[in-house]
Length: 633
Image 1 (tube, one colour):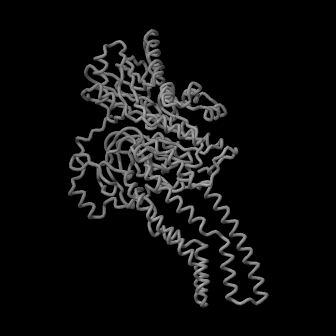
Image 2 (cartoon, rainbow, N blue to C red):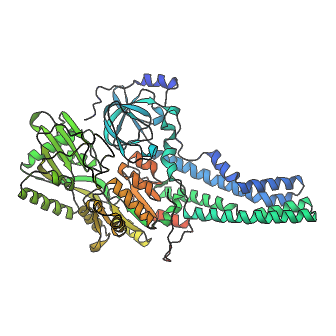
Image 3 (spheres, rainbow, N blue to C red):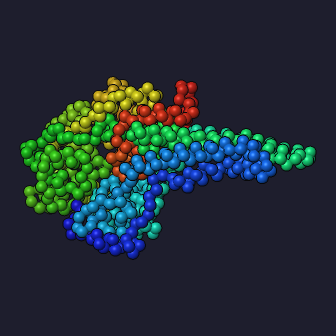
């Protein structure tokens, strides 16, 4: 059902202020990076630094000021330089990170208002739609939304939430639109762990960090054994205390205590420079991860294309074009959850909203949406979706179906996105029974007991062709990746032929482009799926779970994988990749789990950022046959 917000007035500003004064506000600070105290503590109070400082103090007490300066002075200078560099990086990154801070939509005095999560108070009415983060705990009071609670539970299944159901902060809306009332805020909810909860699962060490750890551990072991032997020797020979302390300082100095410091400073400086190019580094070691990337998985939208969609053409079936456009206009105007595709259709086919009897929001797994009307000349269920998902549900003569298939194929070959629009005049409610599940649609909404089914007996009303504007810098960007030895795999929910046509237009692959559809993947066994993941370049009509599996299989085969995404459906695959990259205009959910955020949505900054990463890494990027890998999460 569409969300009715007209009758929900929410709190007044005075009521909200009064509750905040009583301590009922969501007064938690979302840290965008480490604190200054953490910077000082990490740089100054390492084990090696503590030992050297202690030896320096002992030498000063013995009157050996020169030796004390040699022993601890350089370490102190390194600490000062490290703190200064990291503090400067923190200030820069904190300013940029404000761009990706999650926002909340509250209803105050009967009107929707965008606010910082800290301004939410107990009892606020909050509006949440597809891709929005649920910032406080609450109870649904209007509408329906499907929620991803994977950051809380580790389970990727979507959970349907209707009126009366509880929603938890730290989860994300995937489809639908709803209003929920805040029941727990501040320290009593999950809100104070949003940032950490979304990022801590990605705390992995890069190959360089693993190598440094190994070297330090080995040298600490050698130094400790040498120190033990010398201690025994000096005890037997009755060596003076001053000489013993001096030798201890030399032994401790065998451990390169500045190695961690140099890596950290290099990461910080690299992050600042990459920020200047238009990418916010949310995990410092992502700077080095860039240098190890061998395969870059990306969606079509926002990378090859600008995410600006336009309705190019409609082909009516059994009705005239004016009727088809009027019906499409009413359909889009009546939807509660409008995406960019619906906005493009609405711009070309304006219409007035009608009273909705039932609604199914678009899902990247279902790949269709539906609206049912129960009165007037539009009575019935209307479905708009990918042709591959609707063919089996259509009821029309063979000639009409063949003509539609030919038109869909011709448009897809031109790089156009194609949708089918169909109607069942006798359906006004969508079935609540559990649907039949397959490998392809098992992720349609998780393990739901009330997942909506696609109505049978659909009468085709027409086909729609939409165009995606290609990015002007896409060709040069892909060339930059090719020169860096990074392979590209385009994984999209769109028609594979459409994606392949667009990819060829920007110089990817050529005639030997290997194209794989989600329907084909669903029919493959594990071995064939893994082979397709490695050999394929274009993957179309892919579900979020298939996208996650593709990334995981590439990792298992030894590739260091980066994943670019912008929608909630990309979250699972971002978690699987060694390097997650999100678009700044994408959903809050995606930005929260990403290692790098492209601030201006510019895919073109990545080749330059990759070179920056190469300059801060000692990882092998030659053709020697080795592969850099990160440990599994």
